[in-house]
Amino acid sequence: MLSGHRTWIFENKPVIISTGTVGGPFEANGNVPKSFDILHDDLWLQQDSFEKAQQKMMEEACQHAVKNSPIQKEQVEFFIGGDLTNQITPTTFAAKTIGVPYFGLFNACATSMEALALSAFIINSRGANYILNGTSSHNAAAERQFRYPTEYGGQKPPTAQWTVTGAGCSLLAQEGDGPIVTSATIGKVVDMGLTDAFNMGGAMAPAAVDTIIAHLQERDVDPSYYDLIITGDLGKIGRKVSLDLLQEKGIAINPDQYVDCGVTLYREDQPVLSGGSGAACSSVGVYGHFLKQMKQNKIKRILSVATGALHSPLSVQQKATIPCIAHAVSIEMGSDE
Amino acid sequence: MADKKKKNLPPEAQKYQAFQQQREIKRPVIKNCLKAFLVGGIICCIGQAISTFYITFFDFTEKTAGNPTTATLIFLTMLVTGFGFYDHIAQFAGAGTAVPVTGFGNAVIASAIEHRTEGFILGVGTNMLKLAGPVIVYGVFSAFIVALIKTILLQWGGL
Image (tube, rainbow over all chains, first blue to last red; front, side):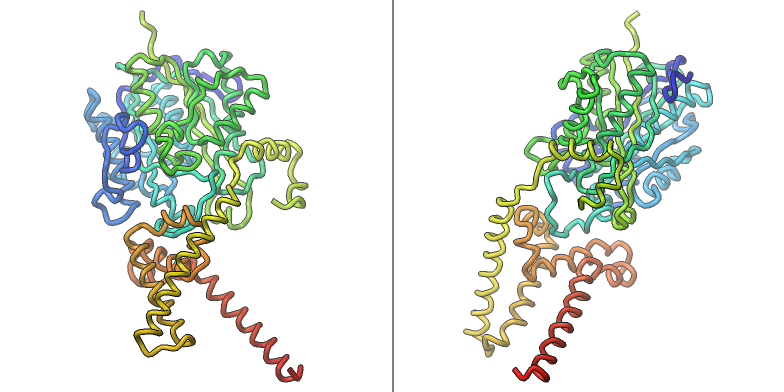
């Protein structure tokens, strides 16, 4: 049901019945290695290109989610996903392997919540019984596409971020055990004229703020309704900028309840500069780390806000500004009745 | 960003950019300069040692030792890049590893490694000079201009 202008309330309670998260060597060495279902110590995953490694991670994440659920692969009706690499080929190739009807999405690093929102909408309106959705990214594949060759010695500024090597997916169902997707707010493209591709957090912060404010208004809840408001990959700088911006606009958010997946995934002493980023950043963060915390009853309600910078290497070279987007999805544990 | 460009932005965006800039972590410029000086200096010392080695033990003069020295440094860069250390040193050193010939070597070698997956002709062959190409283009072009000026001055300037 539409509430306000761009918020969906899912009254039929789509359930996340299982998840699958895969990480690379850098994530295995990170802050929350236990949050991953599968970890690899080889950046190549024994494949002959980084793109194929990314595809394999996406496949593994989906297989793990199906294996951990009460259903069979044949019962999955749709696969909805996307990534950042050249025309989302890793996701498309993974969809070929999975062999179920497929929607390919691109909203940069906001794709994860875009996929979850659309999946929940389809499930909620009885358009399907089981939907797999997820995103993947690979550090080296992203580096070569958006920045420089992996081994190139260019010094990155402290505002730069580290693309997550990993894949995360969730399996949504009409009913079952697990956290419930309760609502989603779709973001609009926000462009504040920033052009520095080495400062994604700063560029994406206004988009996150715009979506969070719209969500709170249209769902008519207070920020304290959520135990955690989790942004995707704003990094340290984007988190601080967006938090200050929210407070300036009179939204009382407690800094302790405002976390970022890109900051959570890595240890303080890892050379990730401002924090993690990438299409997999929010999916492995939310489906891995935060949903596990929900299952352990540490937290009950979260608002996941995935942020994406919608530039391309070409648009940056042509000096275009960086348009950004953020999608928010609320996930809640069912009541204890 | 240039002020001229900023004026074309809506006031809201201008306000946000100022707001954002206050919260941005700044590049530690002085610290970076010192690190670059240190690492760049070490690379130059290694270069000097190699050059002296060629002059002392082989039949090279100070003028002719330049080419084999450069080749040796590029060869060493290739090893360090190939084993995956160069980018880590460069994150610390910045311009210190970018300005000497090792930076040029790294740019060529890193691109060659990166595009190996697309094959030797269209991958390595096409992309090897993707980053180093501008150095060659503008290096050759500025050498031409300087030579032209020198020739004009010598021919007609009566120097």
